[in-house]
Image (cartoon, rainbow, N blue to C red; front, side):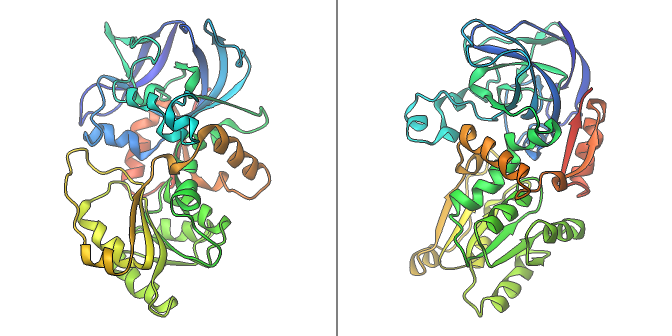
Length: 370
């Protein structure tokens, strides 16, 4: 079949929205008509080259839609089912999956190549070339073919333009607070960067019972939005936050610091550690450039105060358990997905949406398809 998709042909280029040829699903695969896709900062990392995935590539990894066709061997999905894509596939059988860490599934090793899990070939083609898929998904398209390992079935009453956000940013941010940071009732939590991930780290910290939540972002609009999503205090920089956190904790500093800025820097890790108090934990969730190899921080500070520095992928969550869980929290009014969406765009507006993100105008932009 033919459909429309946004393709990145080379690093630094804009997204090109054009017609592509899409093959039918192979064994273990499904054809999905997408309803919406979140515009996550991770796709911007493809444009800048910070994520060196194979090009040309169909962008997008926060998607939700309706199953149209299933391939041979798919028994638990049927046409008409509503699905959200987990941006990391999960097989359920590898050592990580069997221990409950589906975010670290061995199938994730195939994401950089962007070809189908089953046979390493492509179902997406344009200009006579095979196309890779961002996270083996390619949600910047009206239709896509993905492996069943990437699909999470959801209830049909959940709006798909909200549900798509749980495929990455919502679980990643929420889990960074609840799972990776292990925020506890009464904690003081600092969240550095209030975008699609940081906004949900705020919500996770609030639901976990944090007493003080400091949102740190240079954009005034985002600081204002943070107060709606659970923050109790704000600061425009980590330097300013040192004074704010010191005052409200009587010098004890934060129990947890969660790094969710657009692009991480090793030079800032020391500043993040300075926000944490004794036995404080700093969680690094944001992507760092692939070629970055150094971190600036005080090893003595790490030892003498027993501080912790940990990484988190997908919020250390389990997509098959946490996506339905968070959608139920949304249904019950305990998690705000509506307020995360600043603007909606058609597929043809993908470059406008990313410019708005760069300009600090959006918490999250969403592509909405017919």
